Length: 362
Image (tube, rainbow, N blue to C red):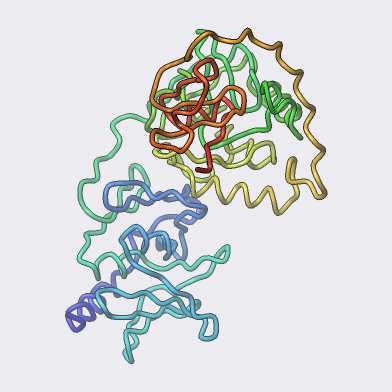
């Protein structure tokens, strides 16, 4: 098996690059086994060849990559055989054999880039290039996009807070993958940098036309649309990293330090890139990442006490105690010990926690 893999790699190494592309062309995209790979770095054009970030491609193909800092080489294991790629070298090592490539491995932004064919074809994966969509393709099943994009144009009527807007249709939109500090929460009050985040969103979006992109989910449990909000229409349904940085308002909130990354699968299309944007903001001490302790949030006014109910409230099998604000699961030690007048029922733990209840320890 190792001999077969080595033979394949020797053959494809001489054809390691894609069809030459002009250096001034737009950023290539990468499609691997049924999905676009979107991370914090994109493929690059180097000496008229398309080079891809080694770790992103390897992990998409189910391979492990290690970096040997002493030898300054990236190691990848393919079907039991170890291959070493060294920055600045136009060859890779397969055991004691040096296999030539038509361009060298390079380091950019602390990432290792090399010709895609070397990995993909060694695993028996077909590799191709779509010049129309500027996409490097690994595997089968790729279908070029039939339209430029399917983003929905909408006008923003008003801004609720940093991560929630209302369209002129009356529909609320919750921005995906971001969480800005609270300004109107009944229990949390006004959190540090919450007013600044709300003002930033209001100045950027209120009264403007935006373009909404759906991930997987249509709405959240409050009936709000879950969307990425774009201030300009991207070139396609799978925009480049540069377009995300420049045109996606969710990304702008992270870059400016107005929001933290907040993940709720399956809506995680840009999670790798967004994670790097958050790190970038933290590194610059931007916004809510400013050095020093954040001021304590302004407490919200206490709500008027509600009249005591005469019996259980709500539906579901989870029981909450309205006096202690603790919820109990069926079979719990105190599940049947709550006074009937204090019982509040919830269908899910998330519902209970959203209402300010915490789970019983026993």
